[in-house]
Image 1 (cartoon, rainbow, N blue to C red):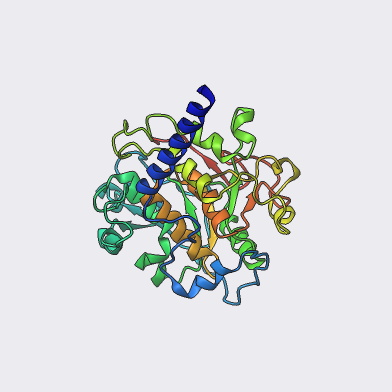
Image 2 (cartoon, rainbow, N blue to C red):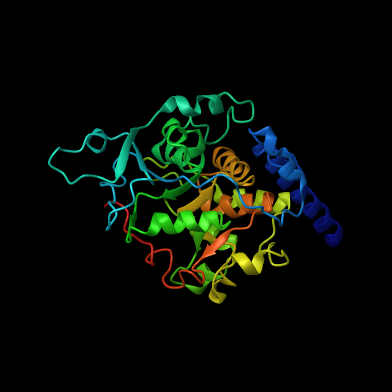
Length: 349
């Protein structure tokens, strides 16, 4: 009798959980591939083993972008060495003192750009996003708006006008250490590297096992629980991860891919690959996989949560994208916090 009761209870629990997930995330159905705004990339999704990434023919025009909204970060992080001016840097902000720095300040490497809310209006009324947790019009908290610039920079007029086709995203905490950094990244793109980013390399073994589930557990603090000003409502990162598992995502899904050994970086990254710190990422817009990835990333931000270090590996799995992990043979020293290229400063500076 007890055994039959337990069986009925288990079936009811699983059925209820699946119903809840379907209702909470009804915009996506089981087995559905990511819906793209750029239909010309649809053929990419149909390729279930996209191991070949032919080199792009168009010359690199590399740009950098960061966003500083509200007072979470106080000052632009100027490069420690001069940069080649052919590689422009764009700072997106809503702060007047950052848009118009005092005339007696040192010349800045950053071109200042005012936040433009018209850029995401089409997303607000998209049938898929109406009523979504982080619809940018319904939930215009600063952290959410910053994600638009991080994930949809290919839609920003200033970058389009500058013909940026390889873009480095910098969090507001990142300060470049060497003037050659942008040239080095441009060369990496010329040689076919894409999604160049440091692996998670935290202070405890749990943070260095490459498991997305550890980032989910680490996200259980006030920033994502709706308790910090400017960071929006509770983001339910745990439910987000359960949904990904339900959709078929598996940890270490990439191990049997032919490209894994070439993109995992140094040998020490073998365990860490699969979880990345997205404070600095290089994206090559010339390559077919990049805009679908960025659209997937933004879509997950709107529908699921602003925890982009959980959605980043999910979109890599969804689109079978090879992430080029750092450190690698070209830059073997340091971690995402301090390395050959940059240093990550504390929030609030």
